[in-house]
Image 1 (spheres, rainbow, N blue to C red):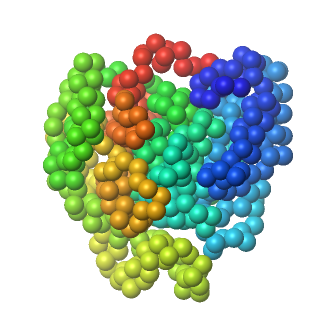
Image 2 (image 1 turned 180 degrees about the vertical axis):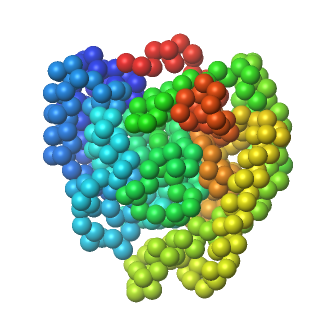
Length: 456
């Protein structure tokens, strides 16, 4: 039972070297083993009987020669702001302590099940997904998968920890401003935020209906590509790196103070050039305007969702969340509408410039301004460094992927690859995602022969 990554698990299940029942039982035992450890709060809900029933059904299908695809029989975890039938959705908050079990799956969970995946757990998150640290939750903070004295990042904290610890090969998160990419960067795994609307939000508790995305967390880029391509409606084709034009963001918040982080970016640039990509410096002068609009839109939409609960009993929220919500209470609707229109205008202007004028297929930068931090850190002090290099690509609605830089060791550096490719051209159904995955694979340094053998 040493199988951990998605491709090896999928291969073992398809070849019947491993049964889905044994796989799920092993994962459930690994979850049991978290009790009494600093990670005991990472699992928010379980339904072992339902998971084992699904595993038995998957085994019967596989034994009959009915193989759905690479997620068939694979155990997955789901962030606890995404509905899973039979389990409550509590969003990491005492506000929803008494939430009844969801009556149906969120649409993205339905899609995972259609692809053959088996849900084994719901996971810890920063309360209501309103923060990037993973420190704020009714059950306590999330700890880094390899060092309990450090933060995991958030808000998809528990999903990142279970993948980072090798307990599940795939987990779902959500990403409004950074919440898949930041925990991936801090935990040394891969986080894919697809383009806006690429994955459905039905059954996902909202933070910002304008900027929310569902995303994937995996151990490496090969697994991210495998999971992405296994989802219904996604036709993922491998994109050659040679000939792609990649812009490296410079200036302002994109400048790097940490010499090791700066070196990781330059190493990635050399790697891409060696593979035939054209790598050029570029700027994003609209960054400050984007960063100013984002919290107004997100905060206004969050307050609208929470207004009744918050006004009835603000003490049920964690103090950091209550402070964020309280700051939105008196904002006039006109300010929200101006920020929303600004975000819409910038999205059109920036993408036209990057795609048409600069002819860029992708952007490269880092994911966060800091690496992991102590669990006793002030969440408010970390918001900017953990969010500001991710927010622009949520506002722009383009796919962005965080991949560990090689040689990050105990304090991983997340490199962020942003896909800009659009329209037909041999890149599959989602060309921006295919471009981002291809470049991330190169940056990660995975040998191409592994890519050829990634399908079971």
